[in-house]
Image (cartoon, rainbow, N blue to C red; front, side, top):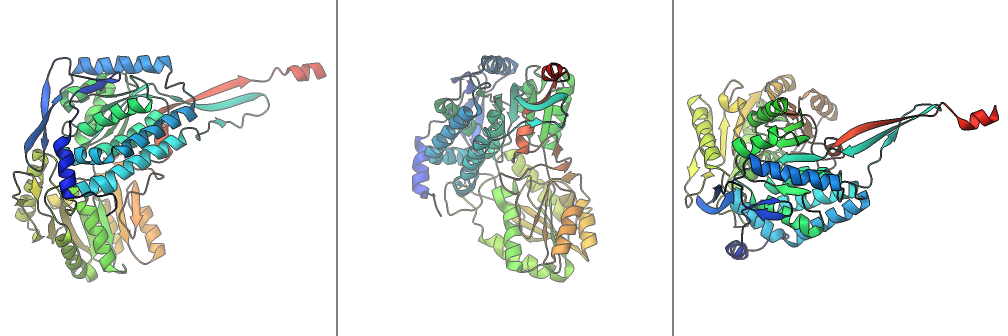
Length: 508
């Protein structure tokens, strides 16, 4: 387990931490204008970690004003792309230097295991920011095929002030997904972290200033969605909002845009993702490992979780038995213990919601195979990994996004039935297919209505591939890949008339 410390070492870091609690605006930490605060809680213990500034519309307005001033000054927006690249790479170096502290902060606030924070989230954050930094001076404009009488240039320009609204399930990693391309393009960026998980965003902003990102270019405003988030959505000085979170809140940002300046809205929302395992799937042990990873990663609090296992009847019992064995291998407990694979649910509301879905599954007739309830562990929000068999598509647990460690097993007779059930959802974020037939794999990947389809594995691609969904899973743009840069830039056409050719006149 590379780059993992011991439980005692992580505990020592946690005891010595000084958590940032004030908003970060114009290069400095500042309390909320109205003096309001809210509690941030450790989900593993239920105990308060700190009181965080609760920003209102005035705080958001101040952040926007300072961001716009910074943009107009041009210290960042007009900096040569290669210089922006060097500053962003310096930020990556500072984040790497502080990775143990950041991993502990992330674990304490989110309930995620330190194992995931240290081995997945922080490395992915560093890789994402470095990748977008390197892309800064490598994205070209275009020249249109305009003939000899004109020159048509297509250039990219930063939007100005943009906002990134981050969820609580992957706080630092999804912040990187958004600020990486936004800053690389030359924008001023305002980040609003989820109310439950603020400290890593604040620390990243502080380190960004140390790396050389000018004052006002990267701000963090903390507070609840109904005040801070709403103020961002309605502010006429913000040109676009990139949002990851629930479909319900995504709808609100569309309303805010309509009521204000028609700002660009990019949404990455929920998912009810299928994993199709056909009767010719090879190596069921490997399939079971992928199925388990997909539904238990981050306690199932993952929008791309394959929470529906749609499997051929011929192999269902054999596969489910192997998945049950894998489930038992995932230890649950103290998130700061690197031996644990499962931590706590991030919020008490999500904890109660998932337990409610489990009870609904029982009442609607699904067969409970594993788990099925809460785990008492020091006052934290822990839920046992759960598997339901005998699920039919009409059941609530087969239709709603549970966002917890709950797997629904649905038996099918052939590939056509599997695709029909897989697509019978309002969402379309991710899907997985397991088959040994390459032609069938291609056909199924095309037939599935999802932004990402993985074949014989579970995943989301990598930083080079776009991530986003169909239908209620979102629209307007994609995170990751070079396509992510498009949503943070304007495309401008510059048309130059060359028809009055002075050389031609001289020849005449």
